[in-house]
Image (cartoon, rainbow, N blue to C red; front, top):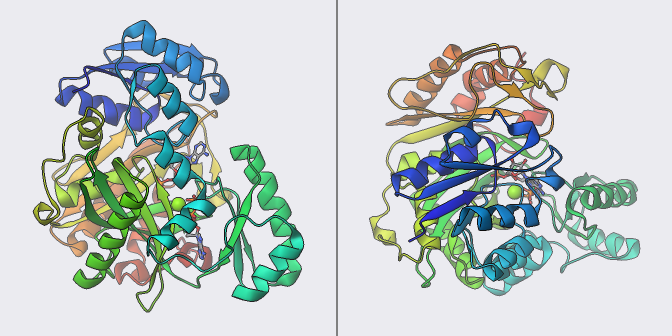
Amino acid sequence: MLSKVLIANRGEIAVRIIRACRELGIRTVAVFSEADRGSLHAQIADEAVCIGPAATKDSYLNINAILAACELTGADGVHPGFGFLSENAQFAKTCRRCGVAFVGPNAESIEMMGDKARAKDTMKKAGVPVVPGSDGIVRTLEEAYEIADGIGYPVMVKASAGGGGRGIRLVNDESELENAIVTARQEALQFFGNDEIYMEKFIVNPRHIEIQVLADQYGNVVHLGERDCSLQRRNQKVLEEAPSPVMTEELRARMGEAAVKAAKACGYWNAGTVEFLVDNSSNFYFMEMNTRIQVEHPITELVTGVDLVKQQLLIAGGEKLSFRQEDVRLTGHAIECRVNAENPKFNFRPSPGKITALHLPGGPGVRIDSAVYQGYEITPYYDNMIAKLIAYAPDREQAIMKMKWALAEFLVEGVDTNIDFQLSLIRDPDFESANYDIGFLNRKNVMN
Ligand code: ADP
Ligand code: ADP
Ligand code: MG
């Protein structure tokens, strides 16, 4: 069992991890940048260490500074949260070398899954269905034209090191291919320091359905059902729900089995998410595996009753999974809305600034994961998420009703938010009838 964990992250996920540690009797160390002196995670942890200036490369991505903070405080584990160093195999390896447990999978599985082109190849060999596309990395333009002709337009160009919706381009026909490759490579180089790309068929109007898995260090793997994350803007998730309104027992069993197979194929342990595209004939295709805790993990916690962050900490401490697949039961319905400081009327431009007044909704079945408070200043340096608002009820209809009122009660002054946009979405008749796919928010202006 770990005794002291350093949280190499900030914001709501750092707070979420600190809470899980406390309940397990694990002491906590927060790290913060100079721009985050007043942040909640630095205040509620047992200890807090400043690791550098605001720029992420000097603080939250600074491996040496983070490991120095471990040594200084005697932390025996590091939880990376999501984003930042969470999928950095080098960081996981360095922790291991320094004798600090990385609360995540081993570095080799991160490496394997982080290279999305290679991950697809491994999945194909393991018998998991994948989106048809290039065999690995595409190197030349000639090769790209040939592959696109083979799979047929439209196609997608994707950064092999990608994440967070970056480095992805849709190509409708031959004339767009060259430009898409150039811009995807540029963006990939800028964000991931790696310009390798691969290509796959563009699946028309699928749903994004992902399976949560938990695996211990002894080869035990279970899945905890799915999350429907089809409501996206620019390939970034906006609202998620569990279970998926289009799921059947039979499809869940098949997708769950595929996800477990995926985890086993890379010797995985930790919490992990296997993302699939599902077409309207219920064919599903592996897209990628995220080897970390996911932003939208709370909706799975609510429908399964399993605390995923505690499970991560127990697994990293060498515990065996305490339950089996047949013990996992899904009950009720959960919806998460990501509330961001941004202005939907101006193309969702970020709106940093000071929160001058704040009222958070509450009541039975309403959960808020957040790190803001009245007087808190949202800095332009990092993610602009204010809170995750999660509603849980016995069925979908009641969860929607609860979410409507929770959004209506949510009050933030001083910065612009997307709360009205989320309200329009949750009231949309097509959302209510679950008639949506990943293209929905691009086709329809829900605010009109
Ligand atoms: P999820 O499936 O959990 O929603 P996302 O792909 O949206 O995952 O990414 C999760 C978080 O990680 C987001 O906060 C996103 O901004 C951040 N993120 C993703 N990729 C990167 C990256 N390469 N560098 C920094 N942050 C990233
Ligand atoms: P990231 O690593 O940035 O999360 P993903 O590979 O998970 O990238 O893709 C992000 C989103 O882009 C998906 O959730 C989906 O909406 C869309 N997408 C990705 N690949 C395809 C595809 N082949 N066809 C259609 N949509 C896709
Ligand atoms: Mg993804």
